[in-house]
Length: 260
Image 1 (cartoon, one colour):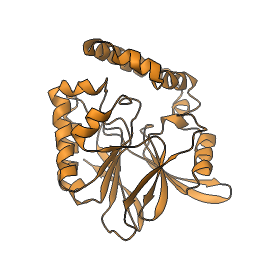
Image 2 (tube, one colour; image 1 turned 180 degrees about the vertical axis):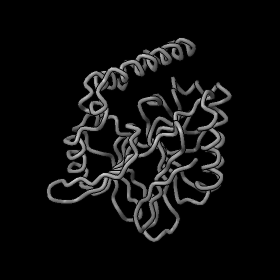
Image 3 (spheres, helix red, strand yellow; image 1 turned 90 degrees about the horizontal axis):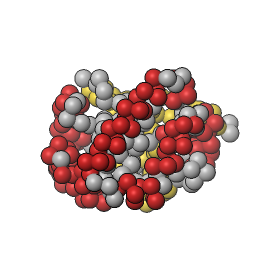
Image 4 (cartoon, helix red, strand yellow; image 1 turned 60 degrees about the vertical axis):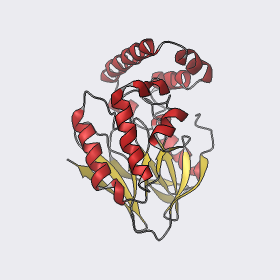
């Protein structure tokens, strides 16, 4: 989505304004069989925390990679989808927004998990507080090479051509792209891979909100931004490489929590 695109209004109320249960936000789990600790943390999160929440939002990069909904043929992917489906069937609604690793997630995965897929960006009503949600990569506008890649792989014609390839070929391509990405990141200045302040201010102004939640940068923090004379807060979600992290929002505000 281009920086000039208006954020979608989800048409849902994330939670009732007076609901004391927290609404939870996670991103950048990068789930894969090669990282069993993250998988175990996610199961603990589902069992001990998410079941007592008003709703769960996953803001991208849930899986390490997703090459199309026929990726559900992998037992690992089916198992993760079933775990999330149990949460939804238990009465906790789940919402998902694609990231840069799982942008090919489609309707079959949505049916398997039970989540509702949201466009990036989206504004939701969070306990009576309009809040802008995004994966966050669209705001890293200083990384010109990445933005060019992002435009390419989000193009409908490119995706149709890629999905027409045999799944083994798609998995090989995805693996090669990840390796190239890691090499490229090692050669870039860290600030280039972070969000651009002007892009963040433009997103706040365009959405007309005072709170934003996103992931992607793997730099968890709460930032305050003054846009057009109004102080606004921006929460960056934690990744799940070393520990698990989530944001819990209630009518009283938001707080970042760590799973270890």
